[in-house]
Amino acid sequence: MRKVLAAAVGILFACPATAQLVEVIYCNVPGQTTQQVPGIDGARFRAGFTNQFERPFRSQDGRRWALTARVADVSSDQDQVLIIGGDVTGMTVVQKGVTEIEPGRVIDLSGIDPRVAISDAGVFVFTANLTGDTADDEVVVVGDLQSRAVILREGQSIDSAIAGARLGPFLDACTIDNETHAVGVRGVQLQGVPIPQSTALLVNNAATAAIQTGVSVPTPGVNPWTTLFAQSLYCDDTCGRWIATGQVVGGASSNDVIAVNGGIVIREGAALAPFTSPVVGIGLMSEMISNGSWFARGSNLDGMDWIVNNGALIATGNSLVPRGFATERYNDTRYSPTWFHMAGNYHGDFVIGGTTDFPDSRRNAVLVWNNEFVVLRKGDPVDLNGNGLADDDTFVELFNDEDGFLTEDGYFYFTCDIRKGPAPVGQIFGRIAVVIPGQRGDMNCDGVVNNFDIDAFIIAVSDEFAYEAQYPDCYRQNGDTNGDGRVDNFDIGSFVECVQNQGCE
Image (cartoon, rainbow, N blue to C red; front, side):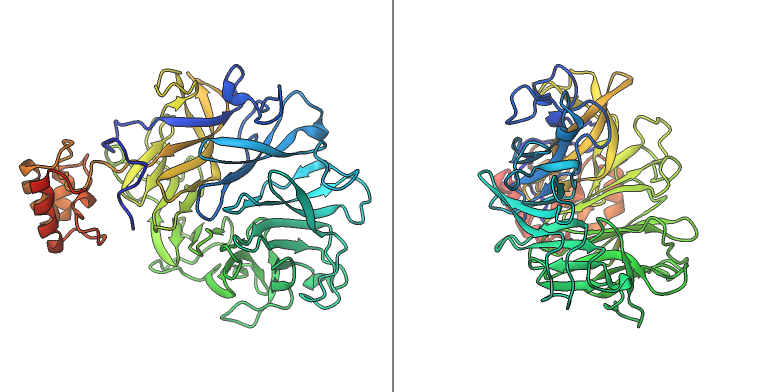
């Protein structure tokens, strides 16, 4: 797990008093330059909260992103756009009701499905309904900056995947193969098959059915899938590995499941180790990033909330917030699932979001890096005018559920609602640089590596809890000077070299 990020240029002590400054890419606050919709002269993002900017999705290498957003001052049949970009710059590639997808056909009033995908090459995919004949209006569209084309459509035969079947009126949860640009989708109400068998996860441009309700049986067990929940299907970059949340045949207290590649990893009514209380079906959520790493969150019958990454428990309700305010714990009083975010990158790093018991309601939600420190907190400042300073009297008001992603170079992109002073004013799509506290070898976090770090290093190697108590605003992992992910005796030689060189890099 990489601990030194390209984004960590400066030194930031991750103590509770430190506030991260959010960089705004787009906003819907009047008077701001970032309210302008890129590529459409005079167009502005629509005012409002929560879903004016939908969830952003990253490409495999994390250098590109795509999201949908709402537009102001236009008719309702033109009020949505699809934007693709990289870093902090984007371009509108599709506008509902305006962009011609096929000759004489544009996206109709129902709009673009917010679940979109993009490849490293900038090829994007989305699902939508087109104007015109309703017998073939549901489509999957693949495009780039220059063009777009329908790759799948309602009524199309998928006989190679499911004998006699045709695509139905509902397609969502699209994915794209990073190399071939083949797509994967969830198809609902497939035609030409019995109703219990009419939902499927279709991959390789619908040439293969990875799951089909009424037919596919997740293991262990003999009961087939009955339902695949909307927007709950995720694939790796080739759809050779996938995760799904849904229901199988069985009793109402044991039929909700999460499965990876056909194997059930979490089941309603069964205890998730190390708990003894069984999992409840309400609120189960899962997702997978493009390298196949997966996350799931849910609750137990006794009220315990949790997050799992690749089968390992990484967060539980009521536990202490790492480097949070004194005695601060995760808590579900404000938000019953506790957890509202889970994201990872290829290095194995992750960011989770949860609500806490901190008494100030404007500071009681956090994003936490690797269970080690708070990287962003509700109430942290937002750089609304883009001058690099926290001088806008603007702050994070509400994190939007699951609306974010983490990159390998240490950026977390996300949407959130914001407030100016005490009053909520809108929503942003922005990012923060995840900055590790201190630097390798700087064991007392004074900004330099020298002899004054020796005593702290010895404590860090010999007693983790003593180190945390003596240096609460520093970062023990700075002692991993040989880069093997651990702080132990094997770091001594490389630490000595760091001290002699007054730095490890």
